[in-house]
Length: 244
Ligand code: SF4
Image: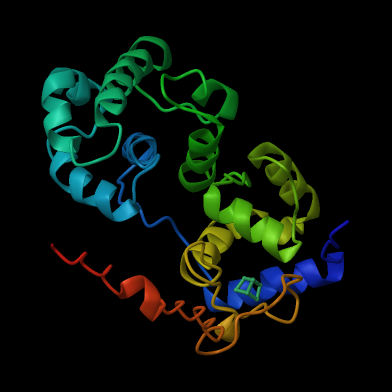
């Protein structure tokens, strides 16, 4: 069984991350709960940079549910077609805006269960909105948080829900509100998915249970096995038969 980080080390872990970034925030651009909800819904399987580029053009035209409905699915698609799954996202954003107007007086609900009733809004999106827009201590487990939690021994779990519940249990209350962003930023920029994690300049290196830690300059590259030489015999052309 892989070891888990101790409670004391977990507290130090968060303390270190908080020193690196005392007031972390989302890297998505938004103005209010509605534009945040739209940006987070668009960010599934897309980078924050790509979403920000699209919303930079979209939000001056449609930053309320009413304006989004007036824009319509086809026009909305023109603004977001650079983002993955844009057709589905456009459909959901129109339906979501309609539902907000009809059932929530045009306001984004502050409750996670209510948010999850909106078309295209899953637990992760609802958790981000609750955390960022309404200051609730929710932790939205994305691919970065899932990796960091399992890799370090902070909160191991087979799936995102198990990791989320474990994080809620082991994170000291004082760190719960920002835990989500500290872990995302740590996973995005230091404890990376692609290539080796950058352990040599990691603030929590001595607390992390992952092994082996990446040294400065990376691991030495493995030598490729030498290619076998083709034997001379094989390369020699067969002798031509003498003609009579
Ligand atoms: S030491 Fe390495 S594996 Fe551990 S958290 Fe830091 S970057 Fe990730």
